[in-house]
Image (cartoon, rainbow, N blue to C red):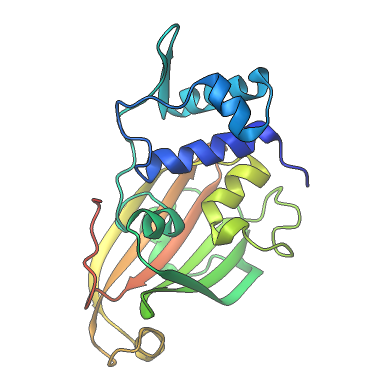
Amino acid sequence: MKIPLYRQIQANLKEKITSGQYEEGGLLPSENDLCGEFNATRMTVRQALNELVKEGYITRQHGKGSTVSASRKSLGLLSLKGWTEVVIASDRHGKTFVLAGPVIKKLEDAAFKPLIDAESHEDFIFIKRLRSVEDLPMMVEQTYIPNENLPNFTSEPLLEGSLFRTLLIRYQIDVQSMTQEVRAVAADKEIANLLKIKPKSPVLHLLRKYKTSKEGFYLYSSIYCNTEKFAISSFN
């Protein structure tokens, strides 16, 4: 699947904004500079910038260029930010290991019931991943993505290991907001083994429902976090 260049530029700039490389209130590079950086026409660059305006990441004013808007998404693992962007922004050495999937599976986990409101999808693409920071297992994440018009999703690797980036660039689906429940629970044997902690040790359990730019298309995640070494916050 050929990814339009304006989508690649849009995703690149978005990541730099959400990681803090382009700070709130600061200016993006000029259109001429972006044309040179991405070897793109002015029309292509403007299309990418217009998409960022629609999403609320930047504002544009004639004669003043493109200004980074107030951030909608704070950094930290309790925020909307994807794992890849958070780890890169925090300058930590992070790794992701796929434990299962992507495979087609029904969303039968009763824990998600409080977050599901008239879900219309029956089949989901399921991925189970283990995240580590500085070689310390930190998160076990189980994610359900609606199996709707996502050709080749189960057969192609995620772009740079990022689910959010893959959805945006390949399928033009942007993750925009989330509902989240956070609880402290005792780790069962499976989670304890994966996180290399003792069974029944306290872990943070996050249940998430992500709203996207596609009407009726929601992602669901169940995440267990080991907070023994690293604090989990919604800030940089």
